[in-house]
Length: 301
Image (cartoon, rainbow, N blue to C red; front, top):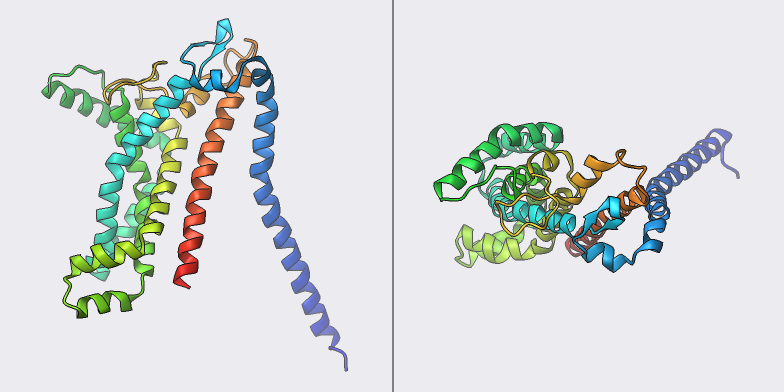
């Protein structure tokens, strides 16, 4: 006996809807591939003219002479991102542990939305805050220790970036800590361990991979940030050697220069290569974080 026409039509609609959503999901994933291929094709002229190693490891940035060394910009990105991570990771971990393990429900539910709200603030607002507050403070604080700086430096950019990645790391870390089964905590406490010993030796060990993934995602967010960094980093084309030196990260280079001086041979191709490098680094960070999270999810299941 066959299915009624109404049921058959409903099944047909379900299959069509599932097929359409699957196609859209695949197309969304393909956008990344299309962008990467487009950037690579635009980068081919400069890659034919100069070797990749000379582009990545040369400090000579003189577009009018055809010299496009990205090392100062790569080092600027590493310095600024590293400073942001050093400042952000301890604060984020302690905040997440408090919210997940110690905070009463009222505080947890009240504070987390405020932290998440930080993710929605436009980066240009962070940049203005950095220029008006962080840069003068860094300049003054450096003077207390006998150092001289304009305030537009690695440290200022690192402080602004650290605040920007707070919600990414805190939100994910809290979710991961809360996902650790309660039975494990109770077993540890029943053996005589204190709450802090349980958190340190049981909960954090169990959630280590997920916490690491949250940090990697924060790193990815910091590495690709443009506007705020551009406004406070100083943008001097040289590799920084300290926290008070100016820096010129890759995203700031692209934002500052694309559209200008495009008449210079190979300049647009050099900008496209900078975009491709940035996309590649961020993509690798995200894939690593995703792989770790998938492994954690499998272990929990």
